[in-house]
View (spheres, rainbow over the protein chains, first blue to last red):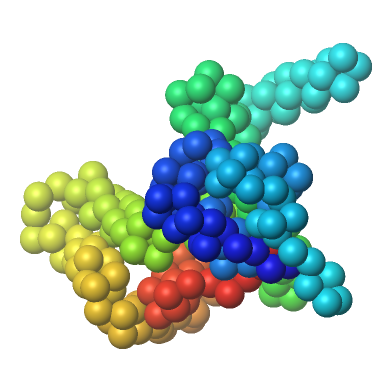
Length: 67
Length: 214
């Protein structure tokens, strides 16, 4: 699954991974893992992230071929 | 409601079983209680933060790995034709317990944080053990040396990556010391408790990120 977390972080006033982690009530390592595509978040976390970054889940995450 | 009652009955059963094991078999079984209930209780009381979803997934993964290790241990004990003693039974609690803690920290923490926490803990255990058993004496200082070497390696390896290879050297020394005594189950126990953290430290200090997907 592809994600545009990093791009949206910078679009939203260069938010840090740490600040997003605190707002979403997860660890910074989780945000790093999501950003690197090593962890697929649950629907709940995806919605929280989309809410924090003022975008939709579809804009933030995209299925890749073979997913 | 029914599930919660079931879990409560199971918890009470485990606590009674653990306490009787501590009283009859050995104090090491207190680790069983500690491992099962300390952190969940602290989390329930909100004294430490709860797991997020990724940490929960890693917790499951590390539990499976620890279970795998206990299978390997069983096969090894059968292969070596050991007689089942209290030490062997303790090793079935202690080794998977340590392995789970190390796998969990290994997958959740950052490289520098992980090397510092595990390395310092193991080093301090060695130093503390020498200090308590021998006190401030020449013999005590000699026994403290491995612990001091571990702490030095821990302080240097996050800064200089290739210094992580020193853990391979420590694993080599442990193998050289303990392998001839593998006839005794306590040697296997001490060797595992030494080699599991150092194997993980070796991998983590050399690799910047672990390439795994959850």
